[in-house]
Length: 136
Image (cartoon, rainbow, N blue to C red):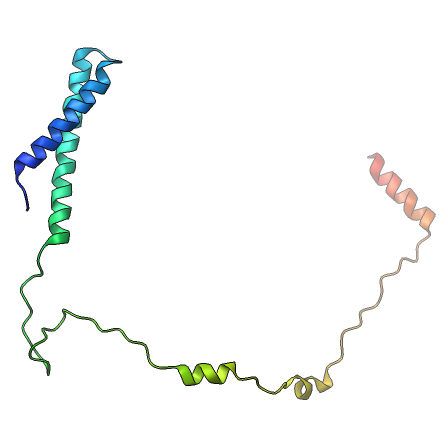
């Protein structure tokens, strides 16, 4: 890992001092010291994780894999070439207007004509029913 234990200690001491200063205004001295020690441990571990992540991201590539295949100068597994096939002809075909085939297929089509819903009841009788339902 890059750096050493000193970086973690400095990071932890900064956390301890900040927590102690902010905690002294509202707490007793011993409570502030205990909270400062807890923050020292947390900041120390965070610095360790930060150093580990930085090392993992900035590490030089591992030893090259053994060469196999036709490209002797290019090691296998180090480069991935992603290309899409040329589909311009298919796209042009889709964009061209095609003749309307709905006339040929729709020759036997007749729209649905449902019966109309008409009430055969007396309007006075319907009004009585509505009044009866609203009373309860």
